[in-house]
Amino acid sequence: MSERLWELLADSFWQILIPGLTMTIPLTVISFAFAMVIAVVVALVQFANIQGLKQIARFYIWVIRGTPLLVQLFLVFYGLPDIGIVLDPFPAAVIVFSINEGAYCAETMRASLEAVPVGQIEAGRCVGMSYLQIMRRIVLPQAFRTAFPPLSNSLIAMVKDTSLASNITVTEMLMTTRQIISRTYETLPLYCVVGVIYLLFSTVLTKLQRIGERRLSSYGAQKE
Image (cartoon, rainbow, N blue to C red; front, side):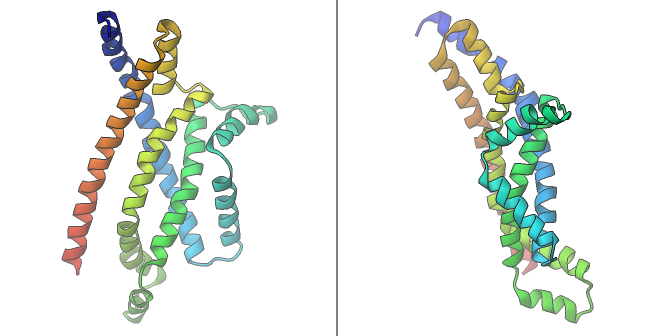
């Protein structure tokens, strides 16, 4: 590799990393936060077996999980203007990623809620707790501990999925890489650079996931 190429890779690393810190990470964090709100609400609706709302929740999950994320991005960003709804790239990406991830996380939360032993819910009723108190003090804390590993995996996957936002002109890491390639024509090395940066982000989140799992395990042992 020539000295010029090494200099290009060194310069490109920071040029790609900055959009990762200012666009990819914020897009991931904001979208995942909204997704968790959606997931908890949809999961609770199904867990409580609220007729009507449960069918709507199942329909939402069926549609979102059954259609590609890229199609959903195109539908919101390029399709909605046909009916007069025009969104900027970043808000459009947040909306789509939140709704998409919310459907998958809702199923994770539903399974975690259903994993809580029924006897504990009955015990809460016996001591006079209301339904909301049972959910807040007994069911949800245990469900979140159970759901933490798969939800963490979903967060890591979302970091990588944000690369699809480049297709609706969000200037995140992949879009920045393409712009640099269009000037330098160094395709393979630059795609390797952006791959390494995604790997670094995923590695940091994986380490945080393991720390969180250990703390939750020690907390659960103390509670027992």
